[in-house]
Length: 87
View (cartoon, rainbow, N blue to C red):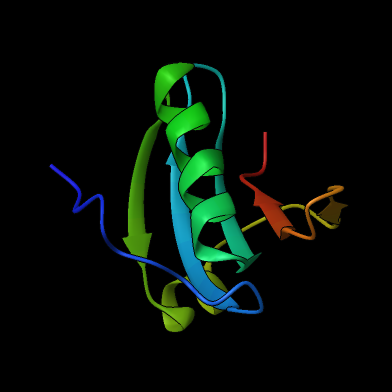
């Protein structure tokens, strides 16, 4: 269980790479943002049935993907770059 007393600087910025496997797609995410917001994003993916695992930048850079990389910016300044597996 998470420690309720852990606090984060409001200007904190974390960065990580995630492999996300859903029922109909697999993609690699390059995620940056406030740690609490990133936690919400990951929780949401898991709650929607995705398998999420942390990987390294090397895994992200060598991931086979289609010709397009999608960038998502949300109102809470989480930045997500998505690479999808070729169909």
